[in-house]
Length: 515
Ligand SMILES: Cc1ncc(COP(=O)(O)O)c(C=O)c1O
Ligand SMILES: N[C@@H](CCOP(=O)(O)O)C(=O)O
Image 1 (cartoon, rainbow, N blue to C red):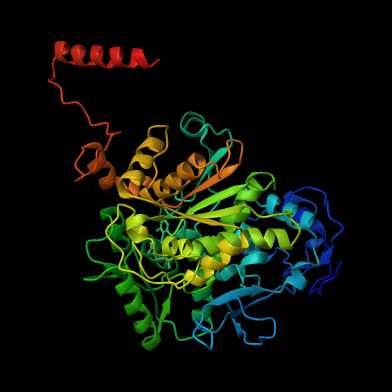
Image 2 (cartoon, rainbow, N blue to C red):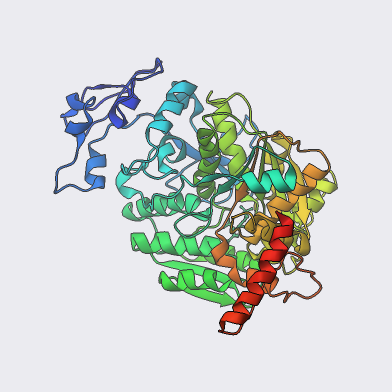
């Protein structure tokens, strides 16, 4: 195991300073310490900050792993490729116009074994330590190893609930081991926070380096814009969001407005907005925040690592993810792949990408045996955040699916709305995109591809409260050509004892027969 350089001498067992755990790994390394007072590494009491310090000040005293690094490289480049860029450069595409990927120095990471990394990450969960209280930054060494803790902009995102869907699994799918990763239980109500903390932190660093970044911009179906505007507002950085007019929910629209973003409502769809923001960011000093920018995926991949961690580093059989612009499916693959490569687990799960039938370019591509990819014009869907016909990360998604022996499924409007209502009736309150993923699960259970005892995780990508209008429409049976068979409309009743008694007796009689 390697010994790293030190500014002030201190041999450091990683789990010592952050918890009182003894190290399990043989790995020891030396660290950079801003203060010589590191003989107290073993004693958490002596590590406490004084009253005039905040958690950032405290972080400055903490030892850091050294000599880890990451760079942009062309996505899926041949081993002979030497093209690479510093993360401090403003670059979104490779020389050939292809996607980029953040490549970590695996030989440096491999100086520590799997047990070391598992212990380090586990030691940081559930704390308020800056920045490790975040589920993203608790994996900082695998995300942006070189960023100064002081530059990080975080809302302590991540660490979202992995919910055992006991009733939904048992009653509706005969499954015992079904889980929902509630990534929408987050600062701005979607998984986008995981990527945005990374991107805005790097922008914060670039601005301190006097790089030409006046603002940060994105095209959005409502969740990227919410996350971007919140993190930029927290850092005092201007944000600009391009939204397709009348195609996102009211809750999503009000998020960037409230956070002080410059909001453009444009008479086009998401793909049109994406096209425009790419042209604009090439001309103006506005940094591109969509997942075309591979920095975002570094944060999003931590949800996959977190799932393994929550299962005590046991690998689930399946992970099902709703897909739109298709960055997230690759982010999950990357998180799982890194855990395997670095010895934390010995395999990766099979991935399923779920699309709305009204916006299904990946599904059609999969069905064609990944022959020619055809972008399409996405139709209106209740899963409005994935109403995307020309996904920027199509190549990343295909790569992730091929490497994970993955599957693509689709859901009609009726299927996704029924699945949403069914899940809600078992105590969840999910978004329609999660309904798309649950439909995929139901289809794969029915065909026997996913078996009763398979440990399966459905990724819930946004909070249901962002999509209340679709639930109101469904439960008031106000959707054209949809039976809304699980609708549960409120009963109007006169404000008098007899009327209330009548409806309650009827209700109890109906329920008695169900018991
Ligand atoms: C709620 C929600 N679910 C799923 C997705 C799909 O993620 P991706 O675009 O990374 O495929 C998005 C955004 O596109 C989203 O906002
Ligand atoms: N659903 C997204 C669409 C854009 O995706 P991104 O990950 O490329 O930013 C949104 O909420 O805008």
